[in-house]
Image 1: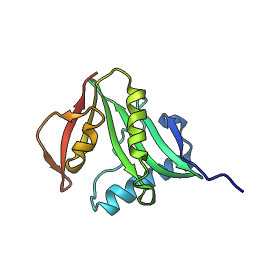
Image 2: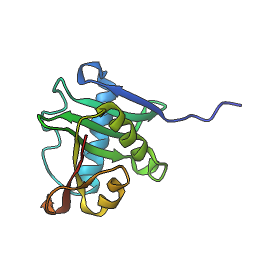
Image 3: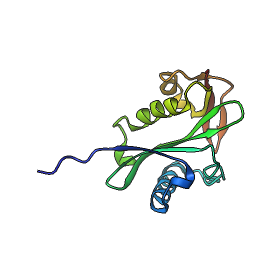
Length: 148
């Protein structure tokens, strides 16, 4: 009997990502945000490589199953690019990543731009709306913040 494979949490800066993992992360982001959600936008925005950026993901057997990044902005840490592979949805991986991201952030304020239909979900982690709803690439979003 082989043990059931499990999802392993990983955290790295850009310089600590190997090329195979980076490719898998970027492919997942493009597959969901650009292809599945039909939003042609600059997915590679230049912020992944910033020294303060932390990449968090779950992988199983070399496959990236869920991902987010934490950017260091002047006044807060910014959680973004929260994504789960289609075949891994419903397993709670995104929530586990957000919890881990908040641990990584510590006692600095945190912000994110939530797709509007997920605002209540992010509220369960202590985020509250911090501005009006807006459209980004045809999808309603709402800025949210969590104080330090």
